[in-house]
Image (tube, rainbow, N blue to C red):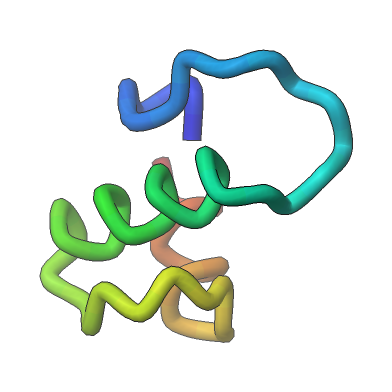
Length: 49
């Protein structure tokens, strides 16, 4: 998420509110449903970046 520029918070190993917001931003960028859940489509899109 940091690599694609949607997360600037501390990396603490916790999937918190900031992480969920960043996931939604990434999903919008990838043209996916922005539900904040890292499912197979989101994971695949992130791995391609």
